[in-house]
Image (cartoon, rainbow, N blue to C red; front, side):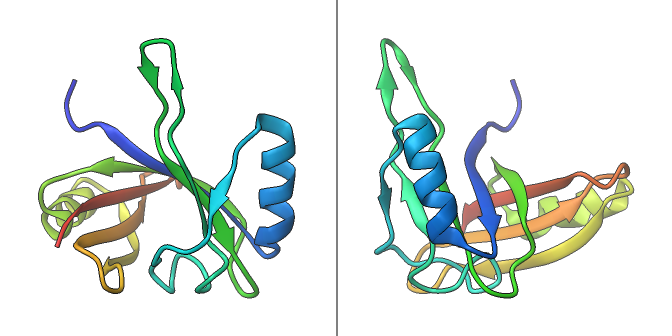
Length: 128
């Protein structure tokens, strides 16, 4: 396999409601204390989902957030060594940049979004 999926997000205008919904539905718990890029979610509104271990499989970590002004969407992030280079390649191949690259405040992580030629939203994540 090439680059792996490393993170997912569920974003909406009412992140507290979404966290309550997915917490009840799937038994997820959330940590809202971590930093997040403002274009991804409002500060304090993003809840990281800790990856659970089920037998020998480890789940992909994720987050549920957003807030006023954030359009509802679901996105998965592919881990890449150079987010800017991967974003340029996505555009060269027919994708469209929609966000970033943007460094997570106080962190060593860079994120970006693009849409593929069919309009599907995809995220990229990698080191700063």
